[in-house]
Image 1: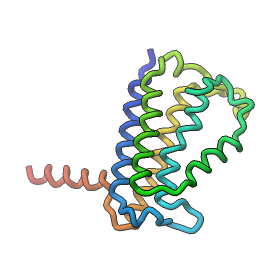
Image 2: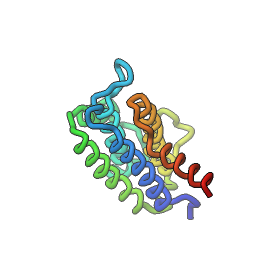
Image 3: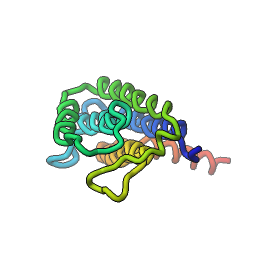
Length: 178
């Protein structure tokens, strides 16, 4: 039995997605086209990227159940994801996408076995150091946390105090009042 298994992975991913959704809700719809710098993703596109980027790992582990990355057409897969991310969406549609796609991934995570998580997946890019499925599947959460950090900076640029900061400030004020 793994000390960190599918239930913990699914729960931690749901927590990360819940925080991403809270950030998305806090940003005004009129700011969804905001880009912090030329060439960067808009808020809308960053959130769509977060919502959809799990699909790469989902394809490998849930759909194809690959034991090797050999033969994957990475450019075609990335082009397909890029085309889906590029579709214009309203704030409501982006939030629905984050919710729906997040549950697809979390439900999959919740149902895999320790044996499945322990399986190595070989890569032509690191032939002597295969990663386990657990390591690869954890990267979805880590990737989202990376982009949520960007999102929180964008919130500050827009004058929105991130919900995690508001919650921490409320706890601190409550502690001081006690």
